Length: 126
Image 1 (spheres, one colour):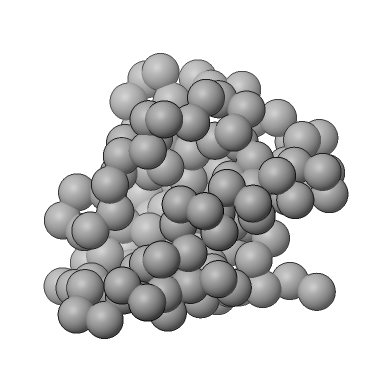
Image 2 (image 1 turned 60 degrees about the horizontal axis):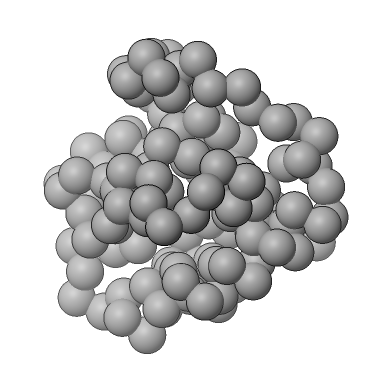
């Protein structure tokens, strides 16, 4: 099961290929994702809404992570960060991840979701 989830999260199979068409066409705001301001906003949202499962550092060791199967994603893992498609992270935040405890977070608008993507993709980097 864990290996299956790893492949799901790793973006295998064309990185965006299995996303619904609306998400495959989504324009990725590269400048925003690289900005310190977006990462700071994303970190604030992450700590308020995501850290309980994913941990304050994004390492998958939040206070509610024990017993979750599969375990919450470790965003500090460089292999994950290098292999995952940005649109896919956006999609997972908005729609959740089937077969996991990751819920859909539709309370965030597009800008907030991209801020979260920016932070998640920077977790664990100096």
